[in-house]
Image 1 (cartoon, rainbow, N blue to C red):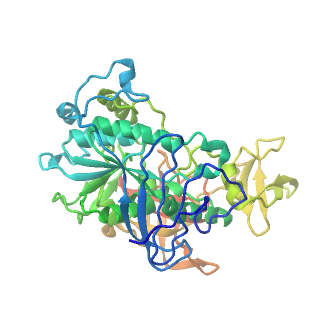
Image 2: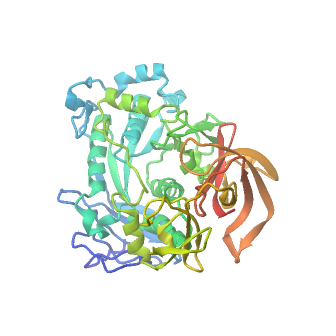
Image 3: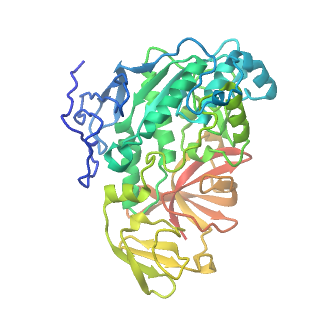
Length: 506
């Protein structure tokens, strides 16, 4: 194995723009990998003693993002082993703090939960044989309950925490160290379940495949959706590469997403074909965020919470005495944590002042700091009197932001748009021609009726084959929040067919 070279001071991933801001408390990082080299990282400590998580990354030929990942292996893994007990742990925020959680093992709770139907999405037909499952644990209540249900169903679980934070670059938030708090909760949950927890540092991969892409999308005037990319490229992408390099083979990868998978085969093999179904909790449904997964990715997934409501999940957490039972849900863009969006944009794109123009009159009403600070439908942050004002359009070439008070006027209707980067999960359900479907243009319960027309040949945008329009969508009703760069997910009879990125609106 090649000896890793540790950089004497903090360096960003290749391509990471800088505005000269640094912090002394930074993650030690190896020199950026080149073809055939390996890099070693150590986790930030935040004042707590942690075993060093050191991984070897082998890259093939260089690319714009520093080379595509060829293989990952741990040379010294950060492992938190359980104490052998699956009794209640009185951890931070635990239901046990109030003395209400019964000291019952997950095995004892299993029959009761099975009777209530809580284990229906844990592949209960496998109880007795027990699947080997890699569980993605975030430190929140959803993934904690997913783990508990799988253990109660009799599956053999190993937990993995993906360390992707990079906000050590921001002095004003580093002291909070949110990933450290998440990890503490994850440790407590694993002790309760009697499983090991492995910390996998993927900061560079996350930057290369999600953050850098999102920054370039904003620079191009689009509004990216990093959460969708995180699922397809990291959680069910790079992480698959990692576990596939291990000696232990996993039958499934489970997470706390609110979604369901329905298999056409019950043989327990990784080659089964599955369909992605809406969650039974329409408000928490997260199929939108999973709509860019390929069939081969989804076929390995298990979503234990797909048939449960959020209220039920909280109740299960209380019954199990989980440390996360009363912990608040995380909000916002996945990679920002407590960093403000405007601060992140200023750090990586800087400022490019331009005019704010009233849509109807053409009058200049103020100045903006950069078109990438604004998105269609935005109301706050314009700092103009006489409102409310809404962002209705952006002109990237002229560096103009158009605003209006009359946001819902007929001449500003948005009921049709183009989509590209189409991903269809099931080959047999791929739409052709013009098809009547349901769709979501953002995460949430709102489903629109729509007509999807797949184009015979792509409509190129200035020769851009990646972002070109490959289908047209017409909604049966208006949606004023459509923005290029966001995704539209398509549904038929409760099945998520896939999604495409919005390329243009009008």
